[in-house]
Length: 249
Image (cartoon, rainbow, N blue to C red):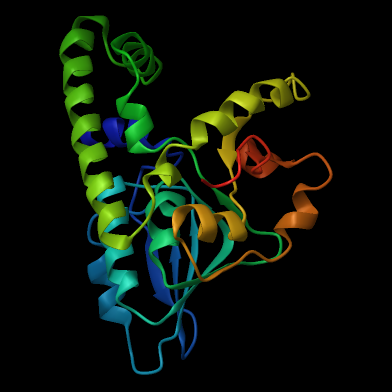
């Protein structure tokens, strides 16, 4: 239970009750549905057959380390990764950028949230608040806060190694904070909604600024226009574009 609790606090995960469902959906395709968890790479490998060329994903998050493992595996494959409905949380942070070829279907959403690096920068007061909201008992807060801080630092180090290995610029895991700051004003337009802030970086920015190439983004530009954001009721998500960010160095 503690591992699931920390994973939720670290990755903004909305679904942690079970592992992803991995299944073949055609002669050339495999689908991954649900939260990413340890063992998903093994399940995926067990379904690979000659002619496999496509992995379809619909995931709102999952365990960061499991997502990094899946990302490393995809990096070695020539397949295309297709976001069918949503790729958020750990899926967006680690799986999507790792695939050599990836696309977001019309109507689907790529939705980044705070990385492990940013969560590790939070002060202990913020961490305690997160643990209280997660249901940790008062008598356990001191110990759990220390343990969470250590776990966040460990995951942030793994994230940095992952980025370096795959050639992803560190800014990819840091720019969300600027996006979230601008979103504060936009959220006032939805006073009756508990909308979590997400970020959908454009394909051009992903390549120029972060070294993440091979992205086909479908109808993203039209869906974010004219205000630069997209509200997704099904996810209770306010998905921001790149307007808060400066041009690449």
